[in-house]
Length: 133
Picture 1: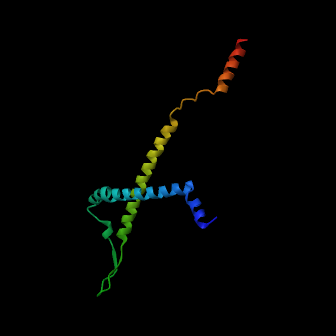
Picture 2: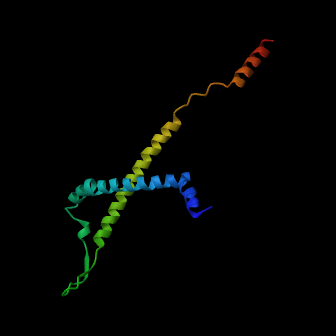
Picture 3: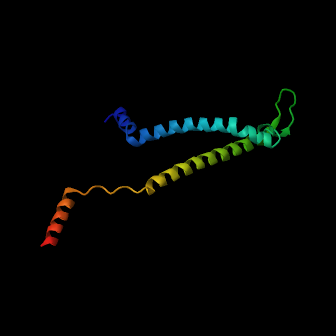
């Protein structure tokens, strides 16, 4: 079997295709959640904490001199990333919690029993005939 045929066999397995779809959907979902965090969640939080923009917080380790740029420790970007992560993690947690509750309601719904098979019907008729005798 040639390398190309082996790769085609590998790539066309159901799990690989499902994984690819999941990665693409995850990337798109990540963009939606990032926009939600940056454009909807963070402005009110920034307003509540007095307009502090964490990304500008930095500790200057060495001042700029001549053409050499200043050496800074940008801990504000790190803090902003942590806040973004916590908000994204909470949003995903809530989405999964809602999906699980909907799934649980589906499972709890009483399913009507399936109709009896032909064999069960015949056995019931035989039982009834034997009871009559």
